[in-house]
Image (tube, rainbow, N blue to C red; front, side, top):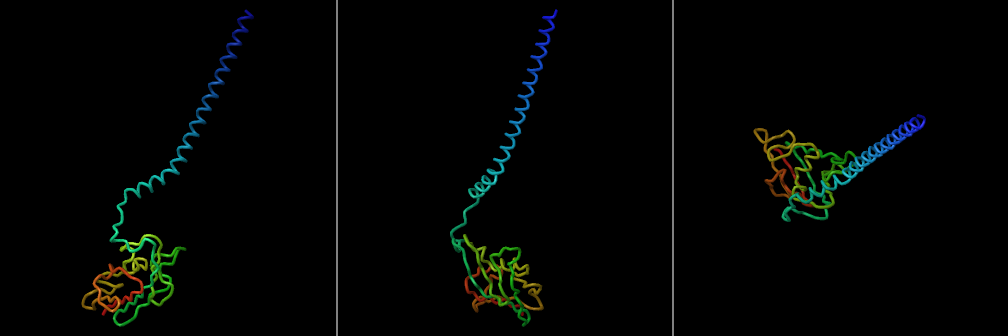
Length: 184
């Protein structure tokens, strides 16, 4: 009987030992699973944006050569003046200079000199006069300058280097242009 009791104790001990081993294996599998999930999330966080940018670059249609103005950027200084009903309008300093970043179109002073500066690829869309007015937050199109619109009160015209231009906001600026917008 004593031998039976000893065998029973050994069996109980062995059962508990096996249970502890199984619990340790279970904990280890859970740790490994957590580590695998964390590793997968880390890899996805790194590779996801890279894959997205690669996909974007491969699927984006190429810019036609006819639309490219420069592949190395521009630094131009056209001159802009706006006259409404005989009154010269001020073009403020520091348009496009806020938030610690300089916009492609910007001003430094109130002289009407625009600065068109950007590195890298420049397309026809990047140099349209509409871009300056968008940054400035003012209306300009073939019908209106600010709140003065074609009609019984006057007509909008634009001169570029002394010649009338019919492109208005779609005009593609060149370096040293003299752009005069008039509403009379």
